[in-house]
Image (cartoon, rainbow, N blue to C red; front, side, top):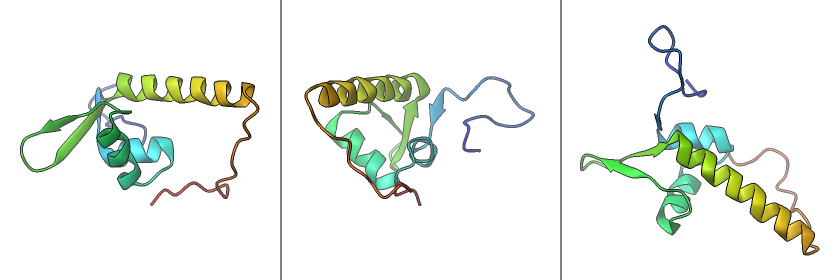
Length: 91
């Protein structure tokens, strides 16, 4: 499920999210999430040897908080938000 919960199994959100779940949360493509992992902006762990990546929910929340802080600083310096077309690039 996109909200990170599993129905009828647990009431609290999942600790770890898939790349797809993170992409849905951020309204971006899976490749964008992988790019954030590659640059180190979004910490992730690899499970096993088959490219199964997971992002801890708290790390995603930290990333979002930092992104808001960067946006506020950019706007304070006179930067303008860019229009991304309104729909994001989610798959």
